[in-house]
Image: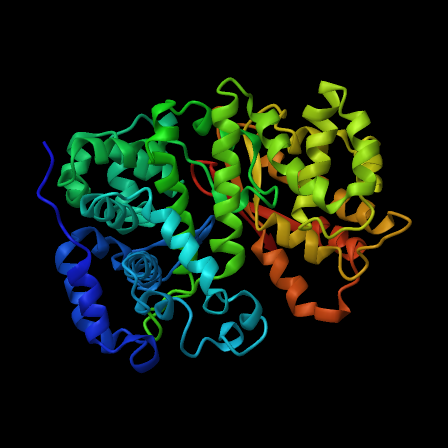
Length: 478
């Protein structure tokens, strides 16, 4: 059943012939490469036809090419890895060189986090990835993975998929929509012809990965809801060891590398926090899954966040570990504490105060963060930015007052979202609330932002608008 091997080499060659990132960074100069992609993968047309959802509650104007170029960027990130795995210098140049503003090799913060200044770490990343792609057919399978990974953002795609499902199974979650299509042979033939041309084993691998609906980038900063782990825990053990989960996690890394790509600059950007940080997180998580196949979602979340907590707060960790002798504390206030601190990138300096506040009068917030509410579990999309930036400059916060106001703001936001979900069709899913509009206000305020108190005041005046399926919402300000 194995299909004839296809190769990434012609795509890499077309990219090289255009001159590379320094000479020719835009779409026009790489037209032959883009034409080759378009003619090889019909799914790419979905990214620039009709309305495209870019994040929960946000859609581009009709026929916008934004997601198309982001997907092209992810593909180029894979081709760069392929080039580097074959001992070529072209790959690293693709993801690091050229005029990239503050992220350029000679600018700040680019000179510190652009992988072009961390060559050994980048090549180590490529070597590790190459261990999971033993054949040219494996590389091709990963290419298809990236081609289709965000097609669920297309309104057209989701409508076709949702029309085949009963009302209670319909969703605007782009990963779930893709997962539903991958499980349906007729939909695959209609919408995903490139997948149909893969071997049966590769098709099953891609389908199993998207069926987890897991969001690796949001894990380390405590952003995802506990229920997001469920798909991982239900994954058959064979997929933990045969590369399936690795491919799914690696696709997130390539996806983020391509996030800044546009018609004017089609080349992705490799940053150390993503290429090094997420790889470490991925390996850590897979190791924990293999160590205890029967672990529950709260324990898995707690154990994962605890690793960085120990490094960041060695003094408080002694007292915290004593509290952790209670499994009730671990699964509720303890997990909530770790998530709040992770949302600040463990930069908040008074961790004991976080626990103290969560043990106080905001138990509803603890239930939300610990995944024990009645109803859908709520994920605050951009929640870490909201809390970290919302706290302002006072991260020492000796009195704890700054954090008190910030946590009350989060609690209020959860209450507002919970009211919109009172008639939700079930409680067995993750609802995503996009709080980016609040983050934008904080950014615009700059040094004039007054910290947690102002965050609480801003949230008090906010409202929430949900989609028609009550699976996603966005904060609105008057």
